[in-house]
Image (cartoon, rainbow, N blue to C red; front, side, top):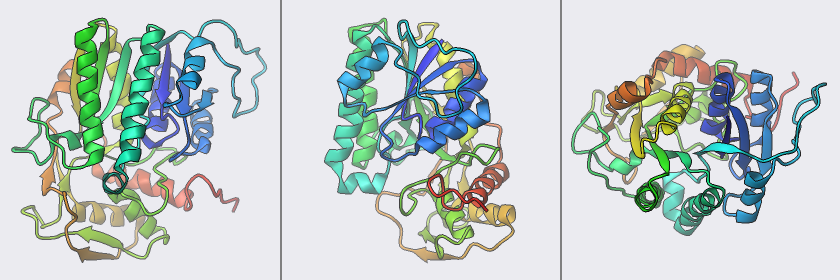
Length: 361
């Protein structure tokens, strides 16, 4: 069965492609490479030994999307062509779409709301319109725990009230509403909304990982870049929260665990569940300083840090109740914080400058 992965060259997308191929799915990727690298897909091919059909296109470009759905375009070979002949003809019978493509930085969304609404919402609408046109009505949507706002209790369950504090979060919540409205209008749609907590880590091979443009927005790549000498020190935003050590507490989940949540969500779609929503998290929180200490252990060096004022909109603590996904999808996060830090260090130390400037020794 063939799965179209939007944003498949990105951090979570590339790790999900690995898990999909491992589980026997056929993968087609569309990505505009605005915050990702085609090198990531070449490395996914190296990890899996499979060629990925890749289309560089923006999901707002309906003509380009339409082409992908309509026919199996000529394969774009990233690796040496295989001996056996590739079959590049026939219909592009996409069975489901996993939709990652989107801008994802909270702070940036406050500065650039129009870009976020255009990319995330207009892009999703274009995708849904093309899916409808070709009768593809199975979708896994990449949402976020940010839709819970400042949670009124912990751990967070899927039926908690939803509220958002920034344009990024609003785009995720609006898309969730759009998807629910779509299903009401046409019950043949089956949609799995996955609300991620804090994805960290890297593939165990060290070949793919998080490679943000510019200064990282997320904690672990920031720590990793300090450890590797790309950044001088870590800013810790606030140490006066009501938490174990005063620093913010989050539910950090290994990206490979998160990726396997998507492969588990796919079979569920084919049971016609309608719209289903799942938290993907570990179910326990770790503070910023706990993560720093675990990373120091993993890399064997000290991480210099500075305590700076809290960031606007940050909450003290946030972690998931992931029991619904365990019960309904038979999915559970298994990798520890130590493993998250080891895998991140393995990736960062092997790729000190990320994907684009490969060191040849």
